[in-house]
Length: 591
Image 1: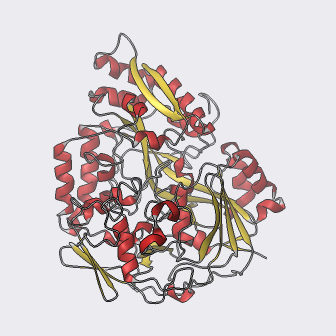
Image 2 (image 1 turned 120 degrees about the vertical axis):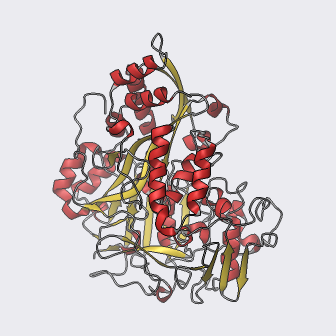
Image 3 (image 1 turned 120 degrees about the horizontal axis):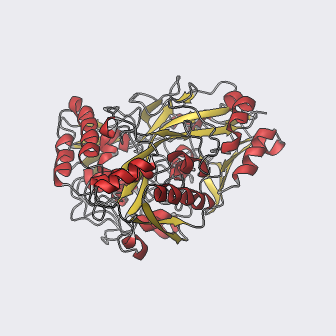
């Protein structure tokens, strides 16, 4: 999953990517060596509980009332609240946990693991024998914030909206719905296709309370994809007109939108029409949530660590890197390490940087820890070195390193590879862009330039004044056309290679910022989807290794973990492994 501003599914500081992920060379690095701390929360697991019913089990000691304030220093927040188009890291975690329901959802298990459970559907869906058709029965006790019932027709319409990639180009439908659902090649969506009632897409149907979806290819992971907000309802007709609905969606969860100032603040208040008996995983303890984006990291860290009143009922999704050791001592269990399914990459343009030795040279010239420190991360804690593209915890993952050893910052090795490729006489020119309005991105870019220059490259950095993803993902953008080095942070919406490798590496995939195009790889991806279920996971892991060994088209920079700090009056300080975010569903204010 990715963030329209900084890629990734459901996750706060996930915005910290190549153009937002670093201290100066030689600066001391507070860090944990290659193994994560024992306190790291569990990542997404394969656990499922299709029979889970509401209400969610009460949280011990939880009280009703009060306001929780959430500071997101590293995140500008969502750029839309429309569940169909929303695909931002912080926005998905907030909105999917509290405001907008989908067919399925995740609950936190007793050991911190993520468990897939029903949401608007009465179970996790029922596939046919070859996974080319899925049926979801919509529960009859879920409501909108105005008290009207959520209908199967509204769920079908919400799913249909995800096919409109002109209106929702950054939504999950652009990658997943259009690929897996049948009949999408000649269907443009309800708005672009002038099909307001979604009558021209016949791969979805409503039969009583059942929503039936036909697949273009076998899709055994549909129950996981069903947990994405875009697989939820939208009001019929003008009530969900995209330009208005993005500002103020109708809530189906325990909270509704009171106000939203993009890049600054989102305020949620209780949705009195929400029925706890209809929801197997969410709670409604706090009266109000206030989310504050793009905050000053140093001020937020000091507020939480000082114990001042303003910080006691607050939490932060990131911490000042220079105060990590202090925070570990002061906060104890209120400093939560949360593993995630995210991988950050640097993506050389495969069309322009055609020699694999140059791509490997870039990997050795990238100053990993300096970049991470400049971006506010703690090496070994919130950033872990990557070998494979598939992160730890993903089914079928193979633990390997290209050329048999971890790639670390080694500028001399980079220069040797460039010499082998015939570029010893003068620096190899790299052109990249960064968001100059983001201080962290600017600091990180400085470290990237230093590292690459030491490795035998020259760097032309182009400052832009917008989300770097608006540049990278727009083929017609004039700046993008000049680049030969980009990046992407991807947090797949379910823990399988099918949710990670095709979005990053399939030809013409929206988030294939490397423009990698190898027909044999595309064919193998299609073949894996048709394998028996018990063979698919290992096949994705093997393909991951083959792609990196044979082509090395993108550089796995690091796996992303989270660090959350909670005030002493925030009850149940825990993380959400599925979203890589605080466990918003279960938080409360301690009186």
